[in-house]
Image (cartoon, rainbow, N blue to C red; front, top):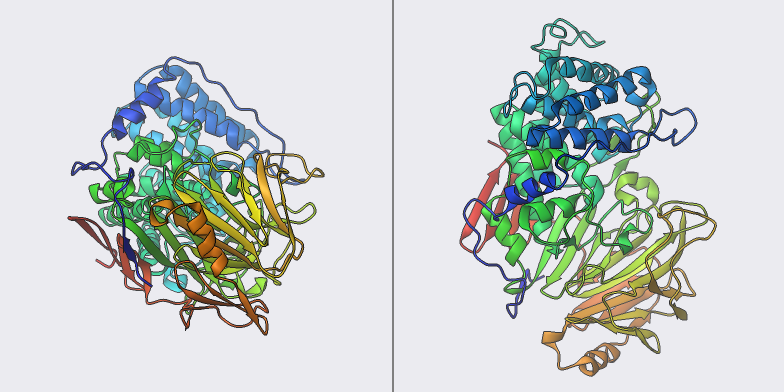
Length: 635
């Protein structure tokens, strides 16, 4: 594969970026807080348990409290009200202890409370005493309850697991050890806690050091073996990442350095594939119809604050740590964010983890939990994206394995397709939709891709899979035109084709929804759907920039000229980029690209013109033009 394809400079080319990074971060943060200056607290409602036997669902309530307090402390206003709000929040959990150990409420905000104590409390690093000693004392009480319970289940066992065994999901696990580490850091020197011990006899000083060591190894392992498991998921990545701002700002020198490098790595990882703040390429845990929407929540929100790209966010929750931190992505990452497409098309190839033994999850912490145990001794996922100035097309290439080979958070809600640069809403998404009353599909599809050409198919080993569809929005794209077994569509900058192989299909304008299920996870934006009669019919996507063609008719002719062939269940296809692909519709043989089987365990964990790292080495090079930064996680 060729990683870089020269092309025309376009509107995504960057203006020069100052050495300190993209300008305007501090101003955008200040404007965000100032916009609500003087406004009273508007509490979100406390909601009943999500399931019988669980604690109340109070995430939104607590988020509204800590956001209000963060604004007040940052601006130095309404301090009595801010302190009272934090005490009220803490008292709720003291009065409702089951809510503390419910994974969907407490640890989503507890680390932010501790950041506020560190920045504005009695020993505040920014302003001393805006958050009073009395408030800090009350706020730490429910956090201590959480830590004592959690420490019996989630331990800093990096020597045995290299951080690849953990309970629940990637983001929950990180939020858990964030809270444990930060509480131990604050409480170990407080007279009311420093003599207390965890149930196994560990002191808070020992607990803090153990988690500090774990965090260093955790960051190193993500550089060595794959950045994320919940790959490029904008909501879950933001709450996974939020604790690392605290590690970077308040940890020991080694923890600060490791967390800062992981932040640099993540933002380079995101920047090279985004178009107008919308990340392209293969993803996991894109639940419900979220893959049909262009959200400003989570990572896209921080992309706007850091780089001034995409849509201005309307909702802020877990991003508070980042907004209150003095961390900014380095200049080389800002150059990538603003100018990665300026020299033409390029490939992104990344290795990711996902194989292993599925654990047993519990919504409330209990002894019945069993951890996920990831395998890192072989292949798993090759994340491939083709990034053109006009579009990004990408997928997760995996073997056609049964579900029991995968950890579920890796197999859940896998996303693939095309994101267009003309409009944040414009996209083409081939996806297996949930069947019946299911919320998500596990192990829904497999695929092969080279450059702007993708073949995909529904997997026999799926769980909860319904129809295989190809979805397009009504906004941001031209009217799709059917031509035999092909559907053609164009945007301002690109042409695309959808081909269903060996099956009849319908092209509709119905919303993709299930009337038996109410709620936003089932109702898509207005759009059009290609629905094959045969769920297991392979689907081919082709996309090419208009600048590379002499009109729509030329694109159509090129696509029509490349007829797929079936030989004994193996689909053979020459793409419009002149790549020869084979794809076994019997789901046995590994796909090939130009005669070479897909390598699910490449020697590089990160490979693109901007990110380079060998698998299992722990040294990452970020480069754009004359700017370069080497992240050595092994020192």
